[in-house]
Image 1 (cartoon, rainbow, N blue to C red):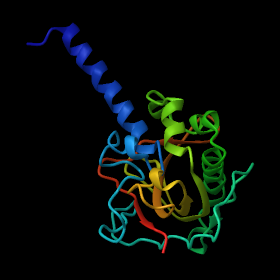
Image 2 (image 1 turned 90 degrees about the vertical axis):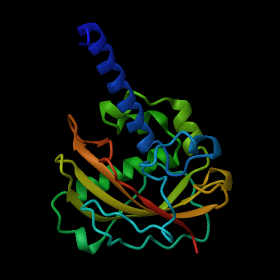
Image 3 (image 1 turned 60 degrees about the vertical axis):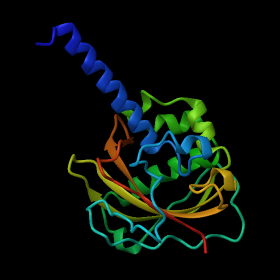
Image 4 (image 1 turned 120 degrees about the vertical axis):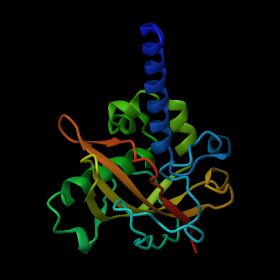
Length: 214
């Protein structure tokens, strides 16, 4: 039989590992060459290209909403990021507040603002977060064409906000280390925090999708 002290140590190590894995789920749109090896198979934005693996919606269906067309030029960082709400979700009572939260999320990334980004994460994701990870993951990122396309409820009660957008980055920082423009279809899983939403870890098995801009 395990001694109590040994069991306690195992539990602590398990919780720490889970927190670190959660951070990797949400760390980056498109990990750099070095960071790719550190991501788990369920990373929010590290999945097989959409051409070979379809998007997975929060409900588990194979239907997906096409990513937005890329802009002709890379967007520059700004003080705010307006998220378009698709007509199909505009009547959802949570649409406005979720879109506003997503605006904060993309603004933090485009402005390379670690502190703002960190404040949007749940305590579980914050535990393993380091600024060096954020800097490496988003160092050349500029996102645009953000559109909230669906809101559903995950099995744990979180709101699953599906959003499409286009990212521009140095090719070395793209998923396949070769593209400067990528179309994404991801879901962020949002829990109600003290006064607003916070980003929770994705459910086991969740995968986002991406494809190079055409």
